[in-house]
Length: 209
Image (cartoon, rainbow, N blue to C red; front, side):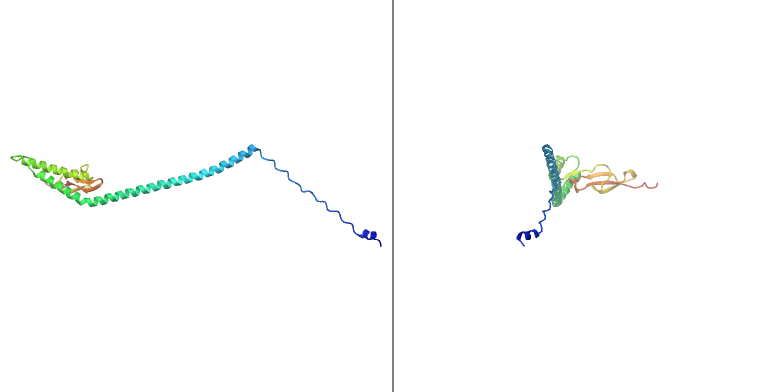
């Protein structure tokens, strides 16, 4: 057998399978430059708005915190000042009480002096000296913030007055009213140092006749 006959016996080679080309999607049409710029500006505006809102929240929170701190500092300062005033008044109160007692005693001495002058006017001179001492005591108290007072109205006020005597009355409407003001009270602002000394009416029904 010849070589050509052997070649004829070799099976033919199959033709390669046809490869289909991929189907390409049509490309999206590009955005208009003006439209793309508008969208970018809008996105930037949203981001800026969110950031501004966050900054505003932080500022409001800091403002509230600062106001709260100021209120706390003011309250502590007021409490400290009140404590200092109360402590100072506690130390000074016995001195004030002695000066007020001296003030009362001098007033009693002036009232005990006769209205008529002696042969050489010494009684009037003594009254004048005592009155000037009494005024000097009031000035000392005033410089320390202590002032005399008389409670308003005719009704007895146990918070600012002390009844040292009573006067009987048959008129029921006068019960509990002031019969006489004996000594002025003294106070340091709202703090009572010595209440006003008064005489108070007390109702007594009339006896059967």
